[in-house]
Length: 140
Image (cartoon, rainbow, N blue to C red; front, side):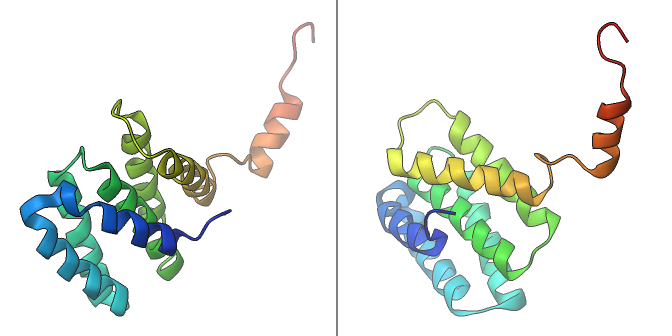
């Protein structure tokens, strides 16, 4: 990646204050727990942050923040679930028609590719390569 997801998360989180209104204090508390812990404690805070995101689908800075912290979860616990979550969040962010910060769009687009790569969605395995070689082409 050409950027630091943790730094991007910090930036977008600060911009999300106005988007979250009365839930800002809850987000600050959860983010503090997420940032200063590991393991199940951090995972629970992460899940709380994502749950908050479902309540604010048009909070674009906060949505970007959730995409960036999902990458942090991937690096902490490399499992398919986190890659799938990241991909789903990226798709929702990129497909929403509202105006967003151009830098966020660039970073989310890059992360989307990383989430897809992590799931092997852009790679052919050996069987697929062999199948493609053995498949008759037009006049064969």
